[in-house]
Image 1 (cartoon, rainbow, N blue to C red):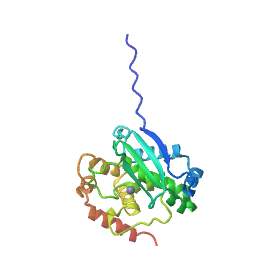
Image 2: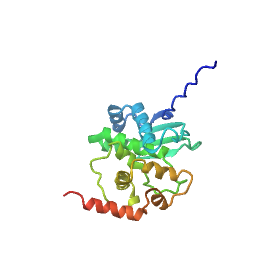
Image 3: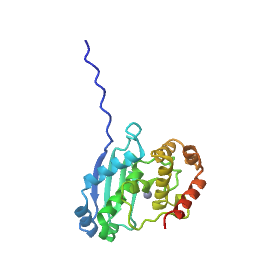
Image 4: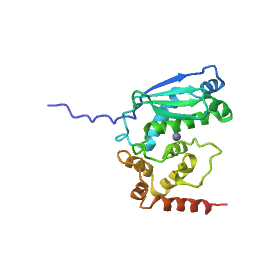
Length: 221
Ligand SMILES: [Zn+2]
């Protein structure tokens, strides 16, 4: 008799090869970085949090082959790009000047920026057609890494950063866990259009934004 069939183990979250490249090891920002975070844990936790927030184990993209964190002496905060040779190899470039400037709350800021950038490694973007602020900081907010200066509200839903993050959190609270996963999924193979909001929630994004803004002014206080 053949042995009984053992079900295959469920696939785990994919962890690509993780690398770090320090361009200015002697800088204050690099010193703070290594004092405050364990790079392997930080990158691995960011990968799993982003994947869990945006996907299931069945539909998570498995094409990302490596993620390299660069600590660079540069202006700005951070940016993410595919490697010049192969877009499945991602590069996160992080400013050591920004780390130094955020010294007072360095650990949360470092992790928050890494989570934000990690979203860019995994989110769908409607083949480049999504508004710039789509999703990115929603994951950071859900992970509890929202900086103290973040405020709800704003002028446009797609302004990005915390403006879009709090709006998406409100959509999820109102329309159910998994709504943002669905929004992300709809721009996997299709170009972005505002219609994705009405397809997923039944309300167009202008009305959602208006209702969200009203909910803020109706709040306590
Ligand atoms: Zn971003």
